[in-house]
Image (tube, rainbow, N blue to C red; front, side, top):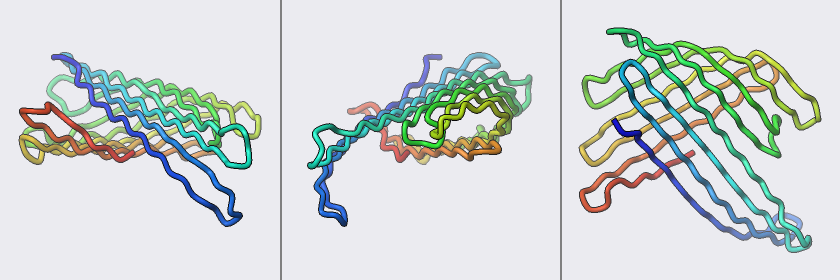
Length: 198
């Protein structure tokens, strides 16, 4: 089976004024890539979220660059004739203006799949891991974390499907949550298009 690849690219631009009457210009580029490759008794999932924003204030000569990315790969092993699986998943993320400016984690856990016989599936996972991060206050942090995730797919019609993906990482210092909702529209003329809300 060939890998399934879904991607979304968006660009926005806006101008505005704040309470101090300073003018600014903002441009934003968002890239989202999801990869799924299914093998006998195994599955490889990958996700990449990249967001670049330029903010240019009229009173300053340089623009502020806000780059954020979040990438993870998940290796799943399914048990024979069972809806349960075990997984190992590395994750790397960066946000220059976030509480953790950079973080690398390795997570492992178990999951269960519901549905699959009809037009919908739901996968729920629980796990634990270890994270090394650099905080905004200059501290280097090493900590245990706990993860939960839910992924749902609903084939509404032959041409329309809805996907949801949510991940939460919890540690003693931070709760980090990402959620994505994607609407896939397929047609015989245009292949597949996707509208996503990240």
